[in-house]
Length: 272
Ligand SMILES: [Zn+2]
Picture 1 (cartoon, helix red, strand yellow):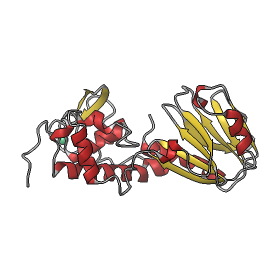
Picture 2 (tube, protein in one colour):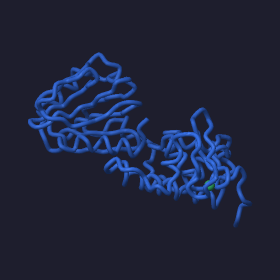
Picture 3 (cartoon, helix red, strand yellow):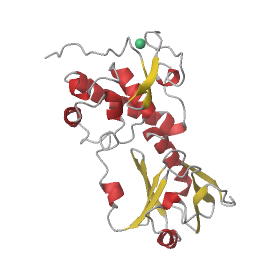
Picture 4 (cartoon, protein in one colour):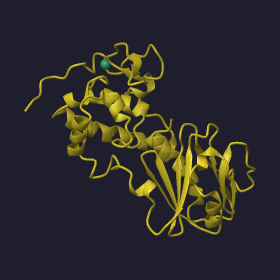
């Protein structure tokens, strides 16, 4: 499932359409990806408009057309964005194509878990304006993280980090990477993580998110070999730091990979 960095990468596939006018639209109006969206209004409102802005926030993308037209894209499990030539003919899973004079901006989604929204309003619509604080924003502070850890004190860290209301854009591999780099066992309950571990966790969330955007998000290149990332995908991997065998087992219902030596099940005593 696409996470923050993959979402950024795919949002940039539509960059060739920036400042270009939409000349026509191809749409599979009855498909589930358009649930709750007026597809007739979408088609009518976008033709003739310039694509003015591309933004991402966690797993949500926003494309602004003109001053007051907002197209939201969520990739779900198998959604993809790409830019093809203007001669591109729609294929079975191309549920939305925005044509400019030179390109076809394609949204494809074989499994239909993605979602396309459209609104016309002077201000950004609620699906964009009510998103929780971005991981890089001032509002996502160490203080906020400590409040989340206390509020969800009984939740183990791994499933906690996957809650999009608190950590927009973090998915399975990023959560494993963050906990490995922070030296925290994914099964630890959130309420046991106090200062200075909470502070370290906050710093690590931002570090992993930033580097994921700089590699996968930029050009789909792999994160560093020294990360857990290249070693976590199959059984039999070894910790790149201590070379001990990694554990792969479900935590909170999701496959989780961690190093039992580097990520202790109990925390050292709180230091003041
Ligand atoms: Zn290790």
